[in-house]
Structure formats: structure tokens, C-alpha cells
Image 1: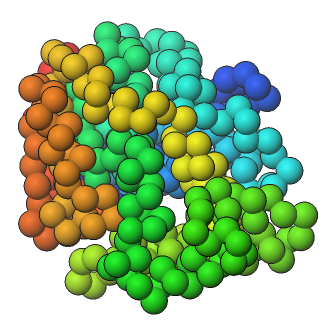
Image 2: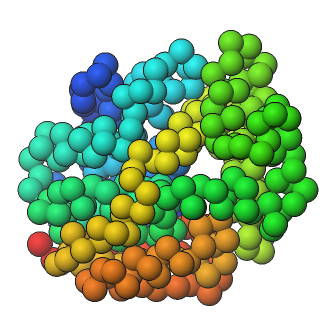
Length: 319
């Protein structure tokens, strides 16, 4: 991910004790007196890479980034199959965002989220609308079982050979059932070889269903066995539980966002997360503006990062 602005380093960072034995890594960069903003990364489990910092004008924003429970620099790390994930849910993440906001002394902040981070941003804003000044969301998702089923099963119509390999990664008796659930069980197997094979197969499919734009390159992070494991464990954990959200909640309760300005950015070539979710959200949230990008797929490439920067620049002077 690369934006308009030069790479900056954090001026503060730390580990926040959020309870349940969890320590969440956070960092703040930019102007200490600037407009507060927080970044919610995707995945779940991808972590907040330094490239997110490049999207914000460092003279005008005070940007907070953090790694959600269990990933990257937060501990305990979900790559360890012995780490219990029962206290890693959407409700826990919403509470963590609020603890971090209070810890940093922020009253209201702009929330930037992408993919899973967009769904988490919507859940947070619907729970705490008074704490959100604006929302900028790209590669918009709503965490529904319909979307999960689309990725884990229906996308086989787009990538039939790759999906067949993905499906065949689970035991024959489970291939017609919930594939996220089946993979989660494999990722909890006592045999490390079974866990590693499942993580490789899951991440290979993850890298395939976003490959819908010319020139797509595999995500190099999947070469790292630790990243593969944490990504596979956390995504399957959330998906097998429907992202810990009542089905359709984020679209059904979009009225809670009334009065919060928003920008929704979505690629027309995003087959992994089709644009209908972003469109439906825009219909239910009058304060949001939807922009569909002709050449973009899922993620920040093909002009998406530039549009995110433009949206953030537009909001920079608002308080």
C-alpha cells in the first residue's frame, strides 16, 4: 500500500493491556496536534503495515495504528495453535478500540478501514457513533454469512480448478459443509504437518480469490509461515462464527450512522467482495458517498490508494 505522503515513523508506541491476558500493540504518528484518526486493518489478522501511514498528511493528522488481538506485534500470538481464541471476537475488538481511544485521550476520531477492517469500522461506529467524526472505507464488506459463502464456495465458479484444490484440502466427508469450519478444525490439529498444510491451502485460496485484475501478484506475506498460520487461524475463526455478528446487522442498522460523513470506495473488479454490499450500504446511509473505481479490485492497488488519500485530504480540516 502506498499513498501520496512520505513514510513517517511513529512518535509514540506501546502495548495496551486490554484484559483477557491480551496486550495490543499501538503506535501514533503525524502531528500530535492534528486531526485524530485510527486505522482498522483487514484480515482478520493481517496487522497494520507501515504503508497505512503513507495515506495521511502527516502535517494535518494524528494517526493511530494498532494490531488487532492475536496478530503481528500484539500478544499472545495466534500463530501458536495453543493460544485460545475464545476472547478474540468482534465485541472484544470494539472494546479494544474504545480502550485505546480513552488511553490516548481522543474524544472523536476519523476511522479508516478496509475489507474486514471496513466491517469492524461499521460495527464500532454503530456502537459508538458519538466517537466517530468520519468514516473512510474501501473494499467494503459487512461480515455476512452470504459474503463468506460467496468466497468459500460460490467463487469456485470464477476459479474452478483453484477452488477444487481448496475444497479438497479438507476430508471428503466435510467438503459439502462449512469449509471455514473444516479448515479451522485442521488448523487446530495436534499434528503440526496437518496445521501447516491447511494454512498453506487456505492462504493459497485467499491469494486466488482477490486475483481479478490484470497484473495481480501473489502476496509475499504468505511466504512467511508465521503470517500464514495467524492469517488462516484468525480468518477461519471469524468466518466459522459469522464474524460474531447477527446476520445482516451492519446493513440493517446503518441508520445509526446518520450524521457521520462517510466515503465508500470499491473496485468494480472486486469479485472477491462484489460491489453490491457497498451499494446497499450507501442506500441505507444518506451521509455516505459511494465511488466505484473502474480498474480496481480488492485492496489498495489500481488507483484505490490515491482515492483514499483524496478522501482523507478532504476530511483533514474538519474537527
